[in-house]
Length: 79
Image (cartoon, rainbow, N blue to C red; front, top):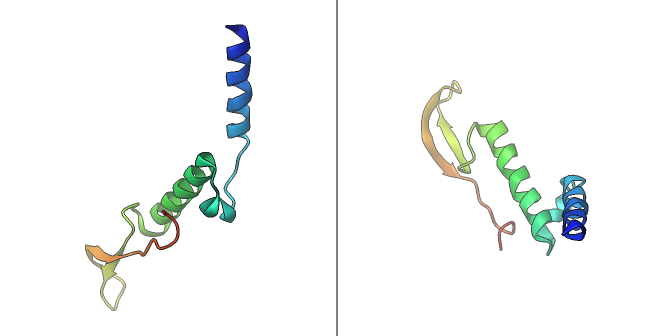
């Protein structure tokens, strides 16, 4: 039982040490892909205030008209 706990701790340390890299989108490692998807969602939220991948509609003065804007294409990221 103690060996399994040590193995779990080591696995957790490997994941905890990972950071986003642009190559994560093309990785076969599920952790890397998850980091890439999470990075994309955070970026969308930061830029648009939402993770639904839609660009808000605004008028010529930059004032919000609608949250039902154009969808951001996701080609190549989620195959």
